[in-house]
Image 1 (cartoon, helix red, strand yellow):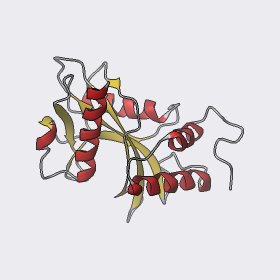
Image 2 (image 1 turned 90 degrees about the vertical axis):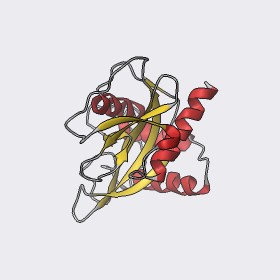
Image 3 (image 1 turned 180 degrees about the horizontal axis):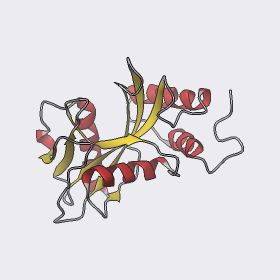
Length: 190
């Protein structure tokens, strides 16, 4: 097993390990996930990349309206659910926060997003990257959109809509609701 970040302190993998080591999980379940993610980083040199078959780290971002009242969700074509923006790390990414911001910008079409301090949550879910399935080890952030912006649907989405945080549709999941609420709390506390 290779020590995470050994000899390469600037790597995305080293950043992910530092972020996870420095994060205080707000729930027991997320503490177990934090430990699982760190173990995954230790066990897999390619833990950050889509090619890592058992699973790989990803970044997701709940994009809030400037006033924190609404969250922008994408109707995900594979999941068939309303979800926050997010996705895979790319070779040029330097930090998990940069992945979160890049994915949110690409999928929302909104320039000038402001990333909130994070991460805000962790989630592990089954995906279809490697049939029959693998897992996304998702590190989740929040971002705030400038006032009076319009979102632009990307090729990765069937639809893109703003929803009041307390009215996220049934066709979503609890991880999305939790992330939107936590992002709103951070924005209000800021």
